[in-house]
Amino acid sequence: MQAGGYPAAGAIGPARAPAQVSVILPVHDAEPWLDECLESVLQQDFEGPLELSIFNDASKDKSMTIIEKWKKKLESAGILVVIGGHDSPSPRGVGYSKNQAVAQSSGSYLCFLDADDVMMPQRVRLQHEAALQHPKSIIGCQVTREPPNSTERYTRWINQLAPDQLLTQGVPEDLLFFYEHLRQGGAVVRVDRSLLLYRCHPGAATHTILETTIWAHRVRFLEEQALPHWATFTIWNAGRQGRRLYRSLTAGSRRKVAAFCDVDENKIRKGFYCYEDSQERPKPRIPVVHFRAARPPFVICVKLDLTGGVFEDNLRSLNLQEGRDFLHFS
Image 1 (cartoon, helix red, strand yellow):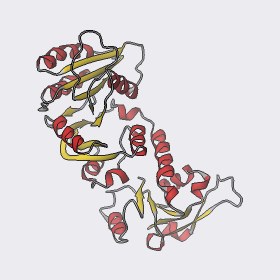
Image 2 (cartoon, rainbow, N blue to C red):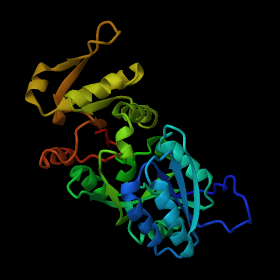
Image 3 (cartoon, one colour):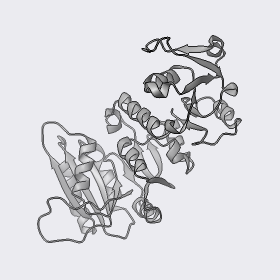
Image 4 (cartoon, rainbow, N blue to C red):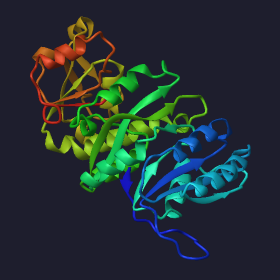
């Protein structure tokens, strides 16, 4: 949930009191999930004025029929419903739809909801209470995955992050919005209760975002926010991901890489990594050392929760402080 303050767009008719919270709901061909999603809006126990702002992004199924049916139910329960959309031949994307739903909303706070997800009845109330206590923060929550065995590591990771790790490790789907929020001095707070059923399925909007696009934005943010504070640093992982990060850096950032570190004896025995595609002469040869011989700060390119705790134990043994001595990039 995030503070909004956006005016309603194109409103016609008698003036109405603005909502305290607007639920922002982009919709595209969401027929299989909409009934359960909209039922969860109806079941919210939030007592302040609540608005549902829907933007239909060129749905070709029965989404609009379902929306019109639920509009009557929701409004009879005192929930304002604003519906926008377009019927162009092609959808314009989830980001566009969210922006349009925000523009037509009236709430002071925005609560983002995907059409294939389900809110627990306490979600709006608890996140709104947290937003009032932390007015410069994006408010998250723990989630439950559906089906339960999908993305087990990811779900466990996001639900167990400590408060300070929400900034050092958190990588949300809405990456550009999140990064700009941090640039403006914002913070991130999580309500430590599972308030959202988060569905994983092949048609989810998450799958439409290219991994290479996300990677590029993450690298640029790393170079903008962290690397300027370090004269040199070590990349923890001399394998594929660590080398990929090195190659993705600007030339100036690459020159700050003092070494790669690893536990793989074969990589350590070779002694160096040579960046063959470099235009520099001679080509850079970066030392590869055991992690205990490496010097912080580290950019860690090792995935968590994959080694039975061995990597995590190795990291803890160094008694380092996250954010100061290392950052996760995995």
